[in-house]
Length: 168
Image 1 (spheres, rainbow, N blue to C red):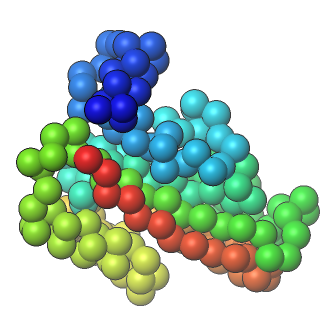
Image 2 (cartoon, rainbow, N blue to C red; image 1 turned 180 degrees about the horizontal axis):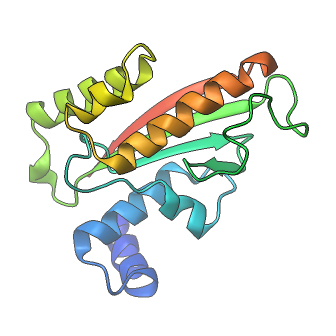
């Protein structure tokens, strides 16, 4: 009941124009990312929910716990890591699948999410293979950003983590 109340307040205060499901996606993303120093635009940039989302509602890539990374992040096409990054920097991937109704979980949804994540984490799988699944261009964009950053930051020996939240 407490979480329901907090969500209702969040919905009314921040995303009044969104339907309940879309507002819940924003709410759960903020919960999952609460340990990072990201602003509202950073959180919104990782929302990939929609048709052909592969079971992923939000897909965030965060460097140094403060920098949200997307396909549009400047400097992704260069081969060298940014000069301001040091060895052992935190490099996090945070994925959220949320259901605003508790009846929404089934075995099929969980397996779909797992298969999608396994596909994009394996760099041997081309983007064309992901598109054939099918997976939306929003998800492809985040996979592209993830892969480019992994290559770029390898010399810094990042402390990488992938965290998946399933929230209802």
